[in-house]
Image (cartoon, rainbow, N blue to C red; front, side, top):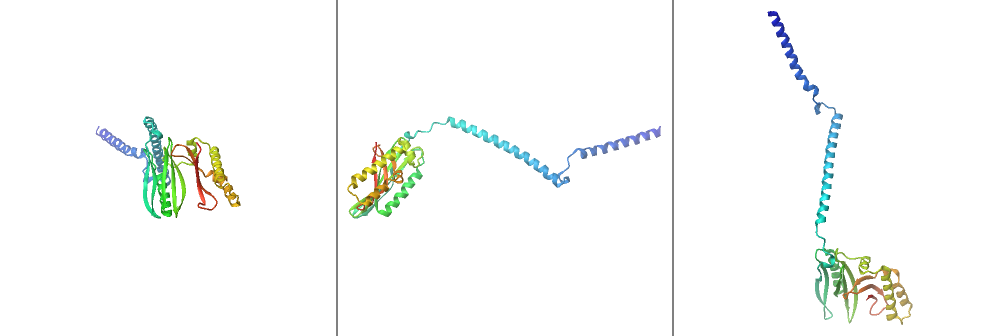
Length: 276
């Protein structure tokens, strides 16, 4: 009996020992190897896969965010009030620069305009005017003044430069057209569209004006030099350089700068007029 108990005790002890050993071995067999036990190649692949998965998740989040933002913007835009039409915007034209000078006992005044439109940036347009005409005034001791017309979509500035020389004066003319919507300088084609005049119709008006000028002022001059000047003034290049605008009375007008004419008080003229 004593031997049997001893045998049972030994068997129980062996069973318990085996059970403890089995518990210690289980985690080692099922857990993943640590990074320190992986090969270099395995480590690189595992890291790359993890990075790729994270990047994909981030990209998906960004895409979702962008889509949400665009949708929100569209909804907000649809609820915003309609912008004020150009004709309703308050537009002012006044002096941005003024100075006086003495020339031949006369006081000459220089007035350079600026355009101000509520809610529209006109800084670049006004800066171009300022720099150009300050240079003209300084170099020529000029008298500068202007007139203007404010239409529904554009402002036309008609600027006169008087160059004093002894008892005679020479005038140079400039035209600038400004959009009431953008505050930017309008091109010839843009201004013609606003005026409702086709390019071909405008060029015909200009060509006829040049022909009439030669006939009226220099019809009696039959010199070869006069004929050459007249021919040069009727080239497509000269005609296409003409600028359309609307004068202070609201009439459609044109300006053709620097037409060469026979020597005399003037060597060049700026031809301008209306056709409406």
